[in-house]
Length: 340
Image (tube, rainbow, N blue to C red):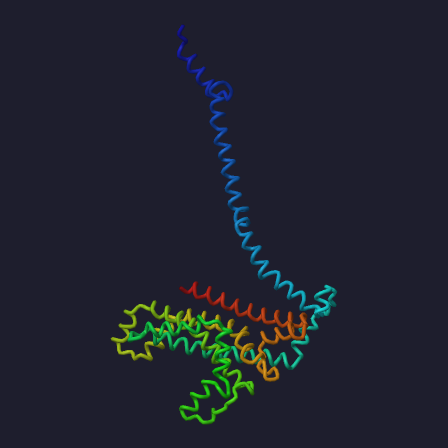
């Protein structure tokens, strides 16, 4: 039996408007998986945004804290205690507040140690930068034997510092040293039997030669890489315009490699401020503690005098100074990146 057209249209409208029934169940079944997929995707996204990064970083953070964070915190804690050997073994330490830091600031010897460390480090930075830039400019020029010279430049950097300091201590020996023999051979008779380690100035001169000798290869290679990145068409245009070699170096080369030079200066400052191996092997801070730098003074207080509290205060002072230098380094790098 056929229904009138208006009745069929009314039933279809009712089925479409009614959520229940066969048509409503199908729509609900269609929306259910989509809602579940939507809820699953949002949970996964929240996990990726909030929980996954800390979980991935956790192993590295634990290793960094174990290797760096805990020793620094332990040293900082010891610097406020009277920590001798017996106290370190028993764990019964007396809290002395900032007495160790007051000792560092008021003791004339430690004030001299800070001054000597700063002056010696600055002199080594100047020597390292001048020699490194000079060798880099030389290696940037085409000449026969440049490859051999590059290999020879790398040798001081590859040699262990303790081994190099031991060899150089023999070379500066007053009776059998090669250095005195060379000076005497070239007519400097005053260097016959010249004792390099009897005065602070002579000893620091010898130590500075070794430090610069081992430090300049890194500067030379870094500056050489920067030199080779300079566009040659700019240099050729300046040459065609009549600029001399000095003018090209001053107005083109040095400004274009300035970011690398700044980074090298800061890295050399950090390295030379905490120099230990060369000083310890060649003089052990002598004669009469006159060549003690901050790292040697820290070692002496900790492992010779067994005053771990004062040694910790010295180590924290050096850590703070190097932290300031590092912050300057990071700011310089960031500023250079923003400029470029």
